[in-house]
Length: 99
Image (cartoon, rainbow, N blue to C red; front, side, top):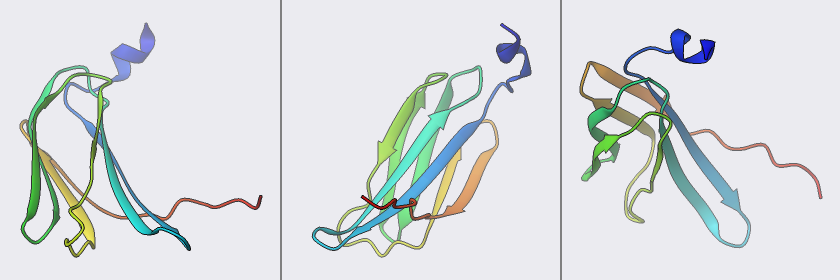
């Protein structure tokens, strides 16, 4: 119950990953999660030139995945939404364990 008290009304969490494999090449994925207590609307994700994707809304605790088109030159991700949300982040490569 106290967790909800500490949450802000409008907030998104963005996790942009770049996964490289020897066999399949490089795969990009952008995970956007609503970590606020209210619905976030008018979400735009800039993945690269001519690749801007949109989502009407995201409910609290809901997650949505965005994938750049194959011809998109990917460098950073910019996410914006109503209520002043603006996030810019780089892609990270997940840690690969042995085995």
